[in-house]
Image (cartoon, rainbow, N blue to C red):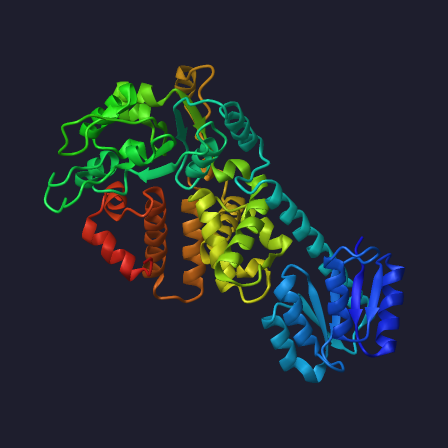
Length: 505
């Protein structure tokens, strides 16, 4: 185990901490000033024999030469993941605030209670070890993360397809990582040296999609001042990823089928056939079989695309991956924002693991971005989680409480002749408390608000219900408001107004 470095010009402080940590089987190394610490860190980075870097660093804030805050800043610049505990006198609380802003793990006030100091150091050691494991996992699997059996099946499928050019259909809910799988299939295929070109067919207006896919000749339409190569030509020799293929207009499906059949197509306004060598990977969150039955998707195109199907699991079907993904996204968010990565407490991680994630992995990634910006300290506690996670936990608790106190339904009494008319093995009815758990929760919440003397119960509960409905519909349609309004059975203007009123922009 790496040693704990203690930095203090006071020999008595060093002695007390050294003896206490040694009794806990925690190795130590002591320094009297910041200059010696930085020199030892540089030697450890050079892999000098006998010089091991620290597990954590405990430093006084006031020392001759450089202060503990100066040392903290220099360490965080080169070792952002190293936990640093700053020791400070009670009169140095302003400095303690500066320590937190500089990325300190925690501060230890002097004079300190020795058992509490050792407990704090142990917590920092555990956090350091956990972060080391997380970093090792990220180095080992930077493309995709997942230990759940369902994800291991996906990884095995990618491995089996690694030397194949076969067409693949990826299905899964929005936000489950379909493009990541498509990129992995390309990277590990014989076409890895060629381009990977992605296009979301649902995000491009119907009038422009044909030109985006197949390109156009100069003068083909108003504004076409030059010839433009489409995505099929751009992906020549590589892979073309067609996301949300279920939303492709019906007339374009015919053109796509022709390209998949013989590799030839015409640019918009063109008269010469263009030949392309492209592997197509398609993805959708829709039930294409049902789309075929409804007449919205060509059956021959479906069979052409559906050669090999990869089904991605929902995040709720791989909850064991939530801790690993959370730490990965927190590291990623911190790197993007240019800040120190935040750590997440076990209690917060456990609560996050119980969330249903209607937006799947993408929603978890967004939550980690939110936490990186909004969480008030370097260690994310359960109370710091975003409102939708806390609200979900509260509703679950309310529903459980409502079911616990709900009276058992009275058994109906039947006349003898009626009882004789019943089948010998009637189907078991659903438990009413399970069927209406959300209604029971609503009733319980209404009782609580009324008991508190609130006079806006109708507006409050209606606002919360509308907010949850619209948010869920927008997640389902990947932010497309018109489609969300259609699914909810409300007008386009209504959903726009509600989004503004409820602050869901």
